[in-house]
Image 1 (cartoon, rainbow, N blue to C red):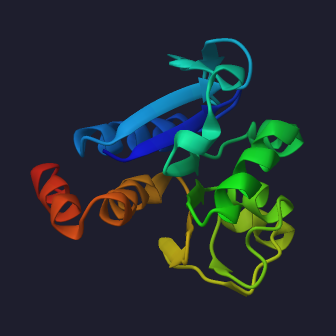
Image 2 (cartoon, rainbow, N blue to C red; image 1 turned 60 degrees about the vertical axis):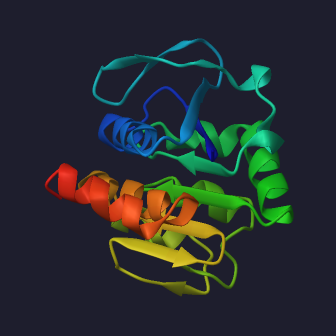
Length: 179
């Protein structure tokens, strides 16, 4: 069974985080949510989510993928040195890392998008150092997957299922959810 770490932070975009978590769990992928500090995390639109654990209590190397939601609080991920270290370690062993909305800036800050094709929320485009910026809903380049924002969260999550599991499973989920 594949396993995914989804860090949660104050100001995360609820639609993105919950869609990622829900769709991956529907695909029988183990998803662990880890807050940067306290277990209850307030989203950008005042929706509180209780994380499974805190970042200090997980062993990041056990995960097949690290997936970042975006949101107004993305700067918290960018400022947390643990996140950059986790992402760099993930990339070093050629494991999957993914980000949506403003969160591709976290990947870029860690130097993980250099020379790669990527996308993001349009307002953060200029903050990315990428090989080629695209406006596709989801962009896959090697072990990096990026997406645009809340409106692309379902397609992003289904692409994660396809990559981590199988295209047939992703297609069946999409059919079952009327995507």
